[in-house]
Image (cartoon, rainbow, N blue to C red; front, side, top):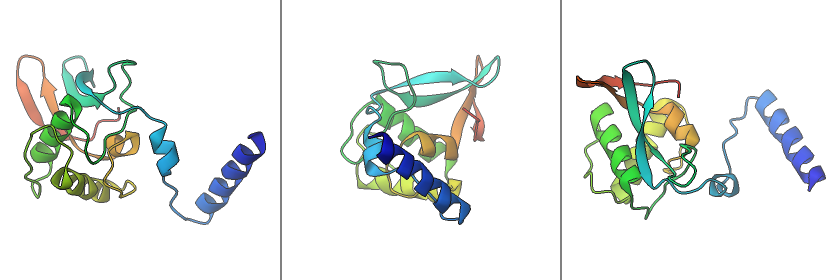
Length: 145
């Protein structure tokens, strides 16, 4: 196991040095839990984003893909509709074909690996609605959270 991890690290370093994009494998993505809720994440004293997370651990390092159904999917759909003018999808909490295609669009625009699956890389690459306490929606941005 240790030898395999070392070999994988060396291969990744060689590919990165050669300018080849390296994205998370399906197996690596499968190691994250499925997002099943949404929560506020403050980006300043009064401003915050609302992003999908996994309730059991409280971590936003979670994934969602085709067939997922949760409040996390609804929050993702809100962000896609609010922050990408080319996207208009139903905010129904079901990660179907339209949500998958919208995630691909956001991944492409944000420079993330394009696979239609939401995960930590996509979260960091996409635009989110930014809200302010007592004032509501203030616009979209790409917070470093």
